[in-house]
Image (cartoon, rainbow, N blue to C red; front, top):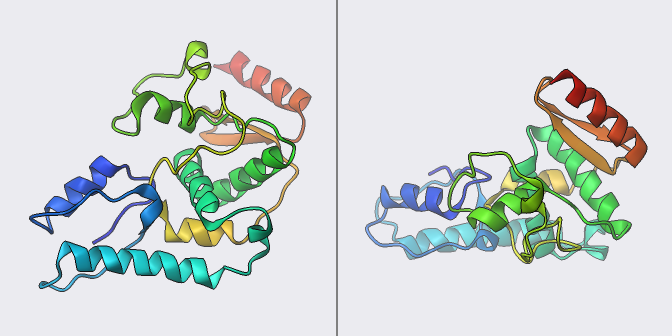
Length: 206
């Protein structure tokens, strides 16, 4: 069974239906998305225990990592869920992780669109429209345009590979980024002035 990184609970439930007659809701913070092997006799409870054991193995493997001077494993899971929703590929996730760290250190709001979308949809459906200015002002504990710091919990299932990526602890000086639909990639900047200039250039070409 392959649980896809970035999935929501509805997507996982649809998968579980094809393997188990009865199963319980699995919280985003409880497991890691990965490929798991099941025996035909396995119950959901045994499978769930297997998922939790793998999460614990990763947690113990990195328990002395330097990142834990500033973050708990659960906080890194929350960051991982943001990377799943914001990042386009492996290296993009590394860059976004560095941006998140830099902004948190400077006590800046994260201002990640994925959290605003989650605040609107509760992760239950695709928004299927662009965010509007009024959306960014929603007073919601998951909206990082409204709150400072991290959301209270993950916004999706986090992949094992993404957690391993986080522990690479990639660093940059970037503080800003936006998605360029023409180039189909995120554009990063170290200063707000540079960010505004690049954003203005992009908008003039749309």
